[in-house]
Image 1 (cartoon, helix red, strand yellow):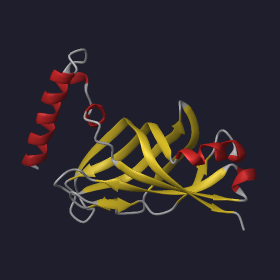
Image 2: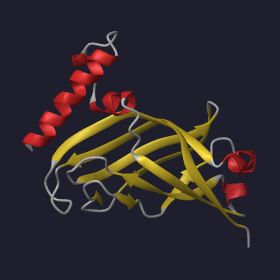
Image 3: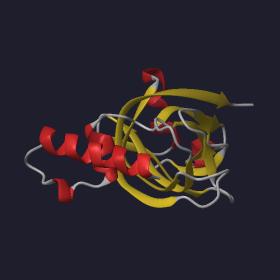
Image 4: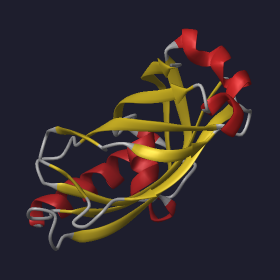
Length: 175
C-alpha cells in the first residue's frame, strides 16, 4: 500500500511539472495515466456477425495491461471507440464477481462482452475494418488497486481515460 502511494505521489509530481496549466490538485489518476500515455488497453477483438448488419450490435473482448507491480481488479467499464473523431462503438459492462483480476505487470483478457452498440450502424461501421485500429476517446472504469485474488483493494474511479491507435482485430462471422 505504501508503494502505491509513493508511486501515485511521484506521478502527480511529475505530471504537475509537465503540465503547468493544470494544478496538481485538479489532476485525477486518469489524467495522469493520459499524460504519461500509459494506455491500459493492449488490443481489441471485435466480432461482427451477419445479424450485426441489421441489429447494429457486436461483441468484443480486449486485453487489459497492468503496468503496476500490484494486482488491479476491474469492476466495471464503459467505453466509446471510434476513428478520426467518429464514434463507432459504445458499451457499458460490469464484470462478474470478483471482477476482472489483472496480475501485477501482466495482461488479462476481458472475456466476451456482448451488446456493444454501433451508433453509426453495422454497415457504415464496416468501413473502419481495414485500418486495424480504434481510438478510445472516453473510457471510464471502476478499479480496485492492490487487490488479493480480486478481494479487498483500494477503489479508484478512472474517469476520462483516452487512448489512440489501439490495435484492433475484426472477426467476420458471416455464416
